[in-house]
Length: 393
Image (cartoon, rainbow, N blue to C red):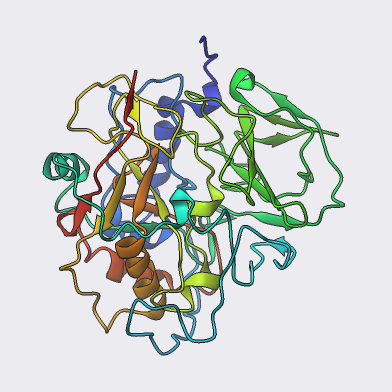
């Protein structure tokens, strides 16, 4: 299948914007802003092993400065991995979600309980090549929250989303690059929907919209609002109430994400993290600098030309080792994130900076604590879950 390269969605363009931004930003801020590498060091760039026509990049929002946010009060931690008291999850039914930008799902979880995103993988076998796969991502590299509070370069930090009702007007989508692998519009995506990186961003410009009443998720990338439509490089429609996640998709297809996955279900969200350990009941999304020309379910697409078996395929899942003890001194939110990484794991969803964890903006995140605590958790604490159903190119 022939794919048309999108100049706004290439690695060279994004890295150029990133380098210009990093030159103007103090290293101290980078560790909390999603604009650079973990711990204030520049992010490791993807290499030429990736397919330049199909690359997707992390949600760093470029240059500028970020005001220091007011730290949110830290609730009393829940010390175990059990669901917080009084918390009742509702799977595959988002009708009880609130409306608006970054709205709470009020306990709702996309997809059925037995969906790959929601499955407890803590006891599954370790992949025989785990050590080399982890080494390729970085044994000594710490985790980095690619989301947070406040503004960075004039835009919220992370990947925003919008929850709408079933009556939201539908607009046409004009696909500019990957229309042959996209679900046709119209989508209930208002022209005012938040864009990743802000309206002036030259990055991935993801737009995520949830139709709560119909349990549908609409995602587009490189999205630019026009007078009465959206221009986007590609897009996908996901059914949140079914294990047939994308009825209109095909094996080998991309989505707004490089792995062909939905983005929203893998985001760290404050309304779950605030509940403490056990509050996040799904896998999280993360990026790697170098990936393999392969994918493993639930992914449906690869974004690399490198065939090395020591590089992670899209969809590869890693988990925190059972031996890792989550520090009781860590914030409630960090404990929630780490417990999710133990129980549900992290899924490789895109090419980007190593160990960058995706999440949604929220002014209640404490950027300083997220940065200082997560960077203490390094690749050496993770292992790869055995990969079944690997598809190679």
